Structures are given as structure tokens and as C-alpha cells.
Image (tube, rainbow, N blue to C red; front, side):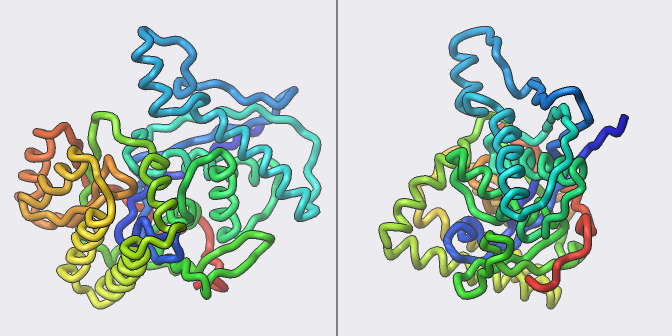
Length: 346
């Protein structure tokens, strides 16, 4: 019996976020220390199996409430079911026939929840990869990213394309979502995506809070309303984030790590000016900066990313962050994308 295993990894948004949902530009990197994995095999009926992420028994009512806050009412199962549903719809729209064999599917993930490391989208990306392999269907990478975003949007998860693009392409990717750069492919809007050599990056660190963070939609929903209302400070900030992404890209290409670090710090400082950020998440950034490391949110809060090249400074960083219940590590980065880039969108 063929067993199909597919993974999708966590990611760190380096510069430009959260402008990906607002016609901006971003630079993002994959983090292979954490992943979501889907296992799919032929079965006598279509079966989506529950995992430890989909709890139905709780020690106390407070335990149940906390689980719902972190995982929603259906854990990862709703992501799997929505992905299967949208996959069937996509194949019908593309007039792609599917064989009639049935399958059982299960997932597992070790990506920390609600800290902005793209755990939900990783489950959807891994599911898509499993379905593409089981049904032997081709889907352009640029389309895969937009398709994944469509699955999450259908479930009410507010997000942009950045996470889905980096998780589909992997490695280090510069993304341009300006309206004039967007194209339509297979019925989906896609941006321009450029693969970069991860070896250009200076030594990075990642840190996340071991206490609960906020789900992504808690942050994004308010910002979306302000953007759509045309709030001048938000519109200007999105242009600023995009400009910082350009600066970061150019800094890496010319090997100017100091300038690259400045764009990371500036990204957080700009975000702080337009948003009411939780005090404990601000403390993460300020603690890292107190030992001389650059720092910004890796996503929507709960995890930070920065540059810390000196080994002794890194030890001081680990000690300082441990005092506020944060885990710090050097991220592992996949150096090659899973398949050849579609250069039509470079």
C-alpha cells in the first residue's frame, strides 16, 4: 500500500510584513525546525482522522476555553476538510479528471500555535501536496499559494499571501504584491516571486513565547478595516513596509548586513506606530534589542526574528529571553526550493 507523506514548514517574515495583504512587498524565509505533516493512503472510504490537535475531552472548563481560543472549534480538521473541498472544486474548474480511489488522511504538527509562525497555512499546504501526489495533478506553484489563501479565507482566517508563497516555494523569497504586478493564472491572482540564495542572510535567530499568543486574525481584522477605510497612517505605513522590503533585498544582494538589520528594526518600529501591540510582545522585541540584537515580529506577534551574529551575544540573548519565558534558537533553513521556480513570475 502506497503511503504518501508531505510536509510544509513554519516560516519567518523578515521584512515587509504585514504589507502582503495590502499590495505591498515582503521578504520571507522558511524555518524547517517546525512543520505540519500529512499522511495519506488509499482506503475503503474517504476518512479524515482526528489527532491530538482535535481534542474533545478536557480537564476543566477553562481548559476547554483555552483550547478553543488557540485552535478554534475544530482544530486542524476544518483546514483539512476545506482543502479537500476546494481541491475538488479546482479540478472541476480546470476540467482535470480525478480517479475514483478513496483515501484516509491524517495530520500532525509541531508548529507552536498562535505565535505567528504560520501553523494553519502549513497544514493546508501539506494537505494540498498530499492530494496532488495522490491524484497525480499538477498545479503551478504560484497558483498553489493563492489557492491555499483561498481555503483559509473561506474559513474566515484573515491573512495575506506571504506565508503561503514561502511555504510553497521554500528557501528565501522576495515577493511583490503591487496591484500593477499582480497577474491572473488559472483563475487566481498571483504576485511576482523571486528566489534568493539563503546564504546571503546573516546569522538569524528566532524566539517565541512559551505562553499563549494571539491568533493571527485578532491582529489582522482591525488593520484590514482601517486600511479599507482609507486611514492615512495605515496607507502610508503599507508603502513604508514595501519600501523596507526593497531596501532589505538590496542590502542582502550587496552583502550589507548592517543595513539589512536596520530594515528589520525599522519594520517593527513602523508597525508599532500604527498598531496597539500587546505589552508582552513589545517586551520580547525590547529585551532582544537590550543585548544588541535586531528584532521584529516574525509574523503577527508571539514570535520574533532578528540578527545576532556574535556567539557570546547570542548566549546573552538566550538568557535574557528566558527571563520572559521565550525560547531562542538558530533556525534551520532549507537551501533549495522543492521544485524549479516558475520564472514567469520572477
